[in-house]
Amino acid sequence: MVNKSRLINAIADLVKDKRVEGISNINDESDRDGMRIVIDLKRDANAQVVLNRLFTYSQLQDTVGVIMLAIDGKQPKVMTLQEILRSYLDFQFSVITRRTNYELKKAREREHILEGLKLALDYIDEVIKIIRANRDIPSSKAALIERFGLSDAQAAAIVAMRLGQLSGLERTKIEDELSAIQAKIADYLDILSHENRVYGIIKEELIALKNKFDDGRRTEIQAVSGEVDIEDLIPQEDCVITMTNYGYVKRQPADVYKAQKRGGRGISGLTRREEDVVCDLFTSSSHDYLCFFTNRGKMFRLKCYEIPEASRTSRGTNIVNILPIEQDEKISAVLRIKDFEAESFLVMVTRKGIIKRTELSQYRNIRKSGIIAINLDEDDELAWVRETDGHQEMIVATRGGMVIRFAEEDARAMGRTARGVKAIELSDGDEVVGMARVKEGATLLTVTEQGAGRRSDFDNYRLQTRGGKGVRNYKVSEEKGQVAAVRAVTPDDDIIMITDDGIIIRFHSEDVTTQSRYGSGVRVMRVPEGSRIVTLARVPHEEPEEDEAEETLSAEGETAGEETNLSGVAPVSASAEEKLAKAVQDFADMAIELQQNEEE
Image 1 (tube, rainbow, N blue to C red):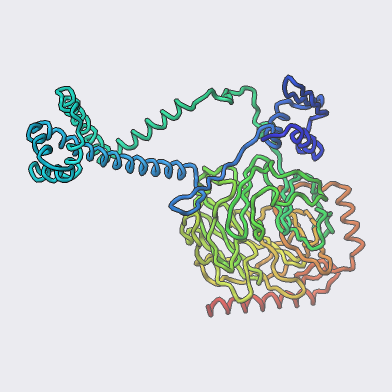
Image 2 (image 1 turned 180 degrees about the vertical axis):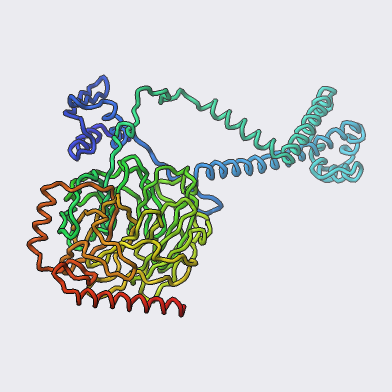
């Protein structure tokens, strides 16, 4: 089913789209002696890698799918290979059973006739006398039935006997046939009483069909030497994966985004459709597994290098061209996994505050069509997924500024398709915006939609029991917006943040002030009017280049009159009275929070 011309055109398109690199020319040298396609390579191309990619992306090596649609029990059904083989065996078992019953019935009928003939031969003189004494065949049959107790069929067979069958040789034939029929009857009864006999007959008949219709194999099976695993030829490097709300995904080297000072304007991270929103960004090694979780609770898996690489401003490739997701389904979380055999857990949190913890090994075998990762309520969707060692403490934060800290053991380990349990009690209209793991030496970074942010020590959040309302993490307001995201960060991290209009900024985590959970934070990004921050990612720290640092400082100098500290703590020129007023306000907020906690 492979057309040569279409194959050549397909290879040419792959070269044009740069999905297969290293090919300089394609020549069709086919003639009446056979088919021949010659592919010329560039000087620095690896022939085996090019061949492997052609096997992968073209019909040079093809897979033919089979839809196992059959009528089973008078109903159409799509079966697996095992199911259709089992159904075939069950059908053959039924056929042989019915056939054996039919042959048993015929054998018993013949046995009955032969027994009558044998009886007639034993009393042949009397039989002849009875037949001669009667006027016609019906009366002869009736007389034989009355005298010997024969059945109607036996009497009819005796009356129909030829004179030649009265010889001794014919008598022997009848006895031999009777013995053979009785042996067959015994064999049929044995077949019907032993299933192994029936399956043995199925096997013999299948082998007979094979021997009758078998011909030489038309394809060759051989050990292919020299194949190169493409993964071995792909260098291991840190990559940044970006995904938009409309499902456009791309891969880039992590060094594309150079570090800036906090408060800068950032650089353009991608060109997007006007109504599209960047919703996810994270770093990964090119050889790690990327597990894609959809809002409907399904999970897919790819290698990082399988994500098409694109430029910094490129929109990327739509995920529907990479994964078989449904039309009303979108990717809500992506997780990097190095090894599915590790003794760890996946912790999932939904928008409605449901948490589920499952052993990672239960997700080891993933079909190309994906598997169910969590069962969701009708109005809920999967939002966050983290890998844990089973003994960590979790932070779950909401858009309305609440947060809860609890031990992950509070959520018992469940099966892969379970629903989960309540992580936090949500207020009306609130939803989860992030989850984090408590780590030593780390702080919790909280960022609002309007670019305010602060780091807080985890000690500020007391350990509670899962399922409570939690404590206040951030006092949201119209000026600062609601909470956009939270993330656990260390002094060795840089932060990459994205706005819904595609602007990206990268800065050192320690550029953000550490405050209590009552603090309002500092400006971490100048967000244009009408925009908001939608997500953030953590990457290894890099020192900014000098020219960029000077440029950032110059930009800050031009806006010296603009307030850059959203916590209310005044700039250097502010008065001591303003500082005191802010301190009083923070103390009042703290007192209110403590009173609320005591009432709870």
